[in-house]
Image 1 (cartoon, rainbow over the protein chains, first blue to last red):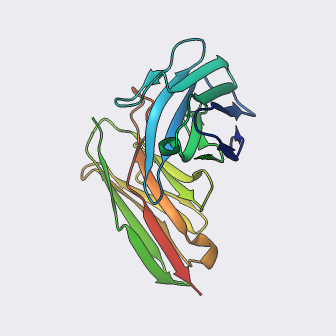
Image 2 (cartoon, chains in turn blue, yellow; image 1 turned 135 degrees about the vertical axis):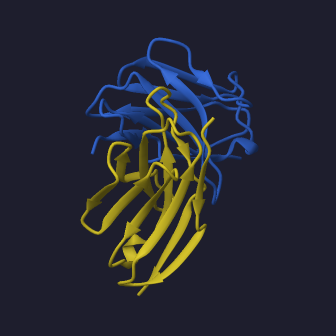
Length: 114
Length: 112
């Protein structure tokens, strides 16, 4: 299957700092990528849809100023958690669709804000 | 919008038994139904998918069936092994929208 690479896999940051998470499609181009948040023992919650060359579309209730998304190329989308607080601690996962409309996911990023 | 329900939430089987997980969807326009396996601390891994123009698809020990009339689809795992233990998610999508709508997940435990 196609490969989506997410980096870093784990990050610990201090409260008030910003953290950037990268999501790359390694063997295909993705005009659209998705960012999810997952709480323990729960399903994936879509945060936003990242569109190459244009603004991201955020789901209701997701603060766009806190979760900045940039999709500067057909293979890279980034999620920046700004002014992180302990309640932002979570598992963040990105995904992208191939031309065959199959969705592949990154390995996920465990963010811990202390 | 689309709503996907998944059952059971937990499933325990003995090694070698079969496991079946069922999902129902609400939007008759949905036409793509993937299944994902998620191991602890990792991202979901696509294990099999089915499109609305077929009723069944098989890949070794894994099969998916789709009943468009009843709007439900199921994952079947035969000859289960301990390494099949994970959380499984179903999802549904319409080609008109690219968002996947996920079920709530099934925690499968295969005991040796």
